[in-house]
Amino acid sequence: MLIHKDFNLQDHHSFGVSVKSEYFSSVGSLEELQRALQYASDKRTPVYVIGEGSNVLFTKDFPGLIIKVAFTGVEIDQSSGVVRVAAGENWHSLVTTCMNSGLHGLENLALIPGSVGAAPVQNIGAYGVELASFVKNVRGLDISSGEPFVLNASDCRFGYRDSIFKKPEGANLLVSEVTLQLQEDWLPDLSYSLLDKEFCETPVETPQELFSIVCRIRRRKLPDPKIIGNAGSFFKNPFVSASSLERLKVRHQDIVWFDTDNEDIKKISAAWLLEKLGWKGRKHGGAEVSSVHALVLINAADASGKELSVLAQHMVTSVLEEFGIVLEPEVSIL
Ligand code: EPU
Image 1 (cartoon, helix red, strand yellow):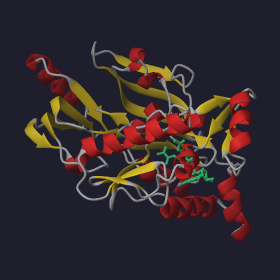
Image 2: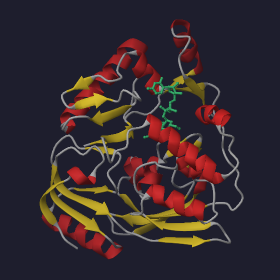
Image 3: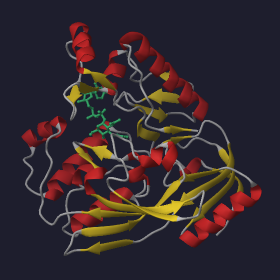
């Protein structure tokens, strides 16, 4: 295991901004992880853990050790549908492997950037489906005590882009492995309206077709982080009360919103709010709002992390002023 000093993180996070960490280590096993943690403890330096860095914005150099979790391995038990995956595996490759092995459920989550270890932290979701529905348990290490942990799905306290791993009590829990329960029977979730529109053109009869449609929509609507730096949706869709939504509808009949499990709470499309305010294509230095999707900030021309965060802050302010709604970032800003 190598500890690099004064390390440029540009190739290790999807915004691709040029920032450095004081130390960097890519760890391939629990033993290497423990050695890296010991190094940080000896140096009394802070630690931040990344997978593929697809949900983080570095606004300045990191004064500590960045640990990249690079554990690999996928174990599929075909008869039970149980899949154990190491945290450093790529999420989209896992979706493809499971589908090709005849285990289903993950097709709607195709092409989400990032690693398997980051998936439960964010409770990744797309096109009507969230990871939470498939999690059997999550294993890892409490990096403050060095103790291993195993949490079942309810212990993970999954919510919309949320989990125990994002709360103070879970902040020290590093995910090393995720176990999923998938199905041989294909029970597709086709509830998301955008999918509906695509089905009018291509009726979906197989998991492979659903997978291809999801990939097609994502390629059309979201810039590929390998080509243009971005972290997908920068903000979460905000929740408002049903009565606030009714008031908003008086002035904005075309507002886009979604029902939630609670009939008094509605989810508003943050992309709609931002597009309405003319944010698509607007720039701040090298940072830009995607002209295809208003919720996506891109590193258009050698942006600094600061430029991206200032642009994001201007967006938050304008939504608050015009709609009285607070947008919260989905991306971790460091
Ligand atoms: N819309 C606009 N302007 C835009 C884009 C979208 O008005 O520029 C409106 C359209 O009416 C569209 C609706 O917003 O139909 C919803 O757009 P989209 O389907 O792209 O979904 P989203 O709510 O913006 C969420 C997730 C995405 C996920 C999609 C599909 C969040 C924060 N984002 O976006 O996840 O792919 O739904 O399920 O919940 C991510 O988390 O990084 C991410 C990309």
